[in-house]
Image (cartoon, rainbow, N blue to C red):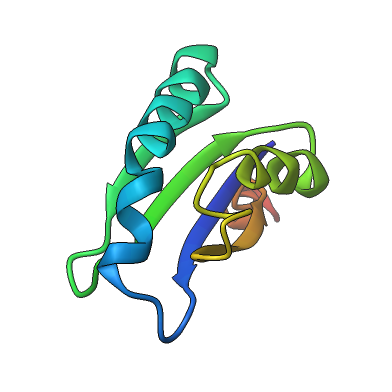
Length: 96
């Protein structure tokens, strides 16, 4: 299942709080990317938050993967997890 994960930074965090975790964060992101579970990673153009596309069995698996990112247990970021399904509207083209 394709999962959209939208990062949500925790209010009142500072850049200094992030610094000790960033190398481990990038290393974990790389592991997830190599495994195929992380399909895409982008930053939003209007703020400093990441958008991930994950391939997981379900939302619970996606949440577990996201919890493995060091910034999450450090309490610096969280994610909104949105399961995606294929668009069914094309079927309307073939209804009579």
